[in-house]
Length: 464
Image (cartoon, rainbow, N blue to C red; front, side, top):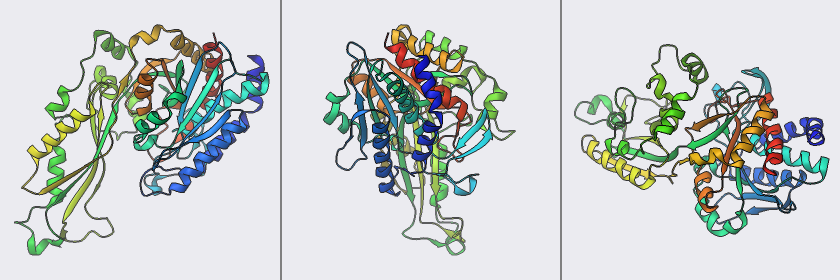
């Protein structure tokens, strides 16, 4: 292990540069962005896997989908096989004027925890890819072999909800056989405090459009008797939550699984300090948090939430004295683990039909949904989970926190089912100040280094 860690330390700048080179490619997987950039990033990842010692590197492709990049090293006879996962696609940059740096020009600046690397994809999830390749490279360059068998898959559609994952599994499932899943796309509890993520929420997204008129009209000539579609949409969306910010759709709340006494105990025991939480969130000074202290983690990790991601009636630059013909919004429902996607969608359809305003036309376009996931608590006693706890403790110098995640990673539940309950170890390089999906996304460089070290220790511990 000393040789492996020494090699990692010698090549630290190489691994940091690998990350910077991936970041420079704007691999935004959303519709309307350059698909060539996503493909270019996939090729860059494939080249990186080869350069860091992986074999059988190739694209896994199906029609009309961004490819998975696959590589393996399968020469550790009698040792477990670890399936590593990360993704190379990223979110759109958001509002360019709110960035302090160029979004795809990795820039080192001081921030929470010390030096941070600012760029879109710096943490989510290109650092996850490099944490894996750094560990693999360190072993192969120092010892000439890995302590376990490795299969690595890097996805190109995670940020848009992995809409083609089912088709990939149908075509390539025989390639993914493994004993343990190691996913590098989650967050630490705080800067310097590692975490093992044990639950994920699901996601159901949709676009809703309300139409009142065939075309925009003069608000002076027609205002009064004419229903405003923006008002109608606002009133309709406001029925989704109550005055305390909680989901107000009764049918949705009935679909939330009840927590066991052990799960409630785990959530109550997770550390919480409101001052720290508000600072990490960046919330305005007088804003109210919707849940009380003992409910915060449950509301983030094990309850549904609704967010309006975007709204459009007219642009700021073209705002005139008019009644617009249509109003549009994109909305997402985060599903608690165990909530069924189809029934949640049906419940929302019934709710919108019941609460539609003034007889206006309402059109809903559904995106592919994915359900949440929660680890069976029995996993905490498995050798794999204990190996991960030890590895993170060695890498960070602090014992990891078990925590949930309010985000969604469709890969986890489907692969756990595919591999018939193989333990899934979810680790990551983000922290509460990363601002993944927002402007000024960043990565704490010292924690990134500790994450790479943790993966080196983890491969060693899993070999036992």
